[in-house]
Image (cartoon, rainbow, N blue to C red; front, side, top):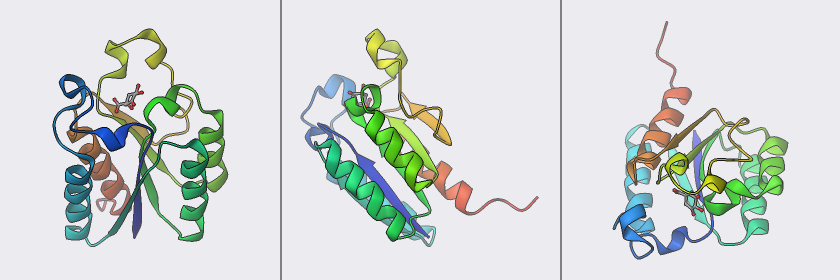
Length: 148
Ligand code: DQA
């Protein structure tokens, strides 16, 4: 199946940006690891990063045309601001997993609210780059349900 990993604003600066919070791995490191993991499980993983809300929305619309089965998204600060991103995910009705590298509940109060979480299959936060891996594993588990 096709999987899409979306990264929101400022995540292009991973590895450089506030390394005490976000770690030293770059976005390329993370994407390569995720792509390898998905491929090993027999799936196709694409990724996309943008600092612009409308580009992320466009990429979500495109995912419907591509029949993407599941989205793993770190919406960055748009988590806390974007009704438009929420509406886009609702519109395409592709199951998604929300991930954050930092523990958004242990930071400023404005990071505790997400416009996406109640629509998400689940939310993972606080594990650095592992948050993405855990999010991908959750997506893979959904694609290959263990037989009852
Ligand atoms: C983030 C948390 C957000 O609050 C912040 O605006 C980010 C990154 C995270 O991965 O921890 O840009 O989504």
